[in-house]
Length: 422
Image 1 (tube, one colour):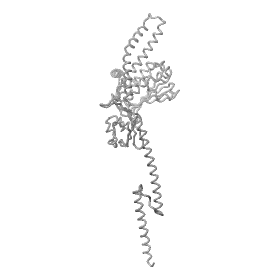
Image 2 (spheres, rainbow, N blue to C red):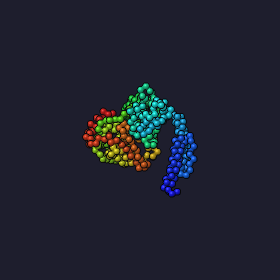
Image 3 (cartoon, rainbow, N blue to C red):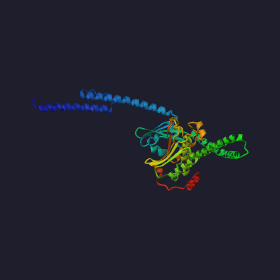
Image 4 (cartoon, helix red, strand yellow):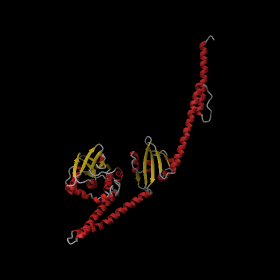
C-alpha cells in the first residue's frame, strides 16, 4: 500500500496481458472465422467482434448473391446464338461463352488472359479493336481453310472494358454476294437491248411520216427507255463501287474548279428555273478519285435541282476547318420529314415515289453518294425541315485535304480526267 506507482504498474501490466490475450484470440478468429466461433469478449473488444461478425455475414450474403448472378449470366449467355467475349482494358480475354469458343476456336484452360487480337491475327480486327469506335460492326471475310464469315460488334462498359459480340454471317454474306452478282449481270445484259430500243425509238420520233396519233406514245416510250437506261447505269456504278471495300487514295482534286464546273452544267440545263450560289471559302483541295467525286457531288446537286421549286435557290459551299473538309448542297425545296432521313441512302428508297418518278429519279443517287464517300473515308449528313428545304453535307477527314491551293484545271483537262476515270 505504501508503493502506489508499483500498484499502478501492476494494474497496467494485467490490463496489457488481458488485451494481448483478446488480440491474439481476435486474430486467430479472423484467420479461421469460417471454422471457429467468435471469441467471447466483453467491453470494447466485444463491440469490435460484433461489428466484424456483421460485416462478415453481409459479405457472405453479397458473395453468394454475386455467385448466383454470375452463374445465371453464364447459363443465359451459354444459350445465346451469338458468341460473347469479355475483354479487360488491355483487350485480354476474361471470359467467353460456348458459342464464342466454337466460332473463334478458343480454349478455356489456355486462352484466358491472352490478347484476343494475337489469337485471331486479322489486321482489320486489330485496328477495329484498338480504335475504340464501336458504333459500327466489323465483318471479317473467311480465313484460309475456313469458309465462315464472322461479324464483330464491340460494346464498351466499365473502364476500358469491352463485350465483344461474335456472329456467324456466312449465309447473309453469300446472299448479299448473290444479289450483287445478279444486279451486276442483269444490268449488264439489259444495257445492250435498251440501247437498241432507244435507238429505234429515236429514229421513229424523227420520222416526218410518223402519224400524229403515234407521236405521243413514241415520246412516252422514249422517256421511259431513257429512265430505264439511267437506272441501269446507276446500278452498274453501284456494282463497281461495291466490288471492293478498299479506300481510294486518288490524286489532288481542285474542288473549286469542280464546283465551278458543276454550277456551269446546272446553269446550262435550267438557268431560268433555279438560282445557283457558289461559296468557295477555302483554297484547299481534296485527295480522291476525280470521277467518283464528280459523280457524288453531281448527284447531290442534281437532286437539289429536281426537288427545288421554280425560282428556288441552290447553294454550293466548300469550306475547311480543324475537322477536315466539308461540301454542302442546300436547297429551298419542300424538305423531308424526320422519319425518312435514316433511310434516304437506301437503294430505291423514295420519300414520295410518285413524285420521284415524275422527276425522273432512280432512287439510287444517294446510295451512290454514300458508297463514294465511304471509299474516301467520308461521311454524308442530311439536315432537313419540312417546308424550309434540305442540306446534304459531305465531310472528309483532315488527312484527305491538300493543304495548299491546287492548280486550277482547265475544262478540257478536267473533262479528260473524268473520261479516264469513268
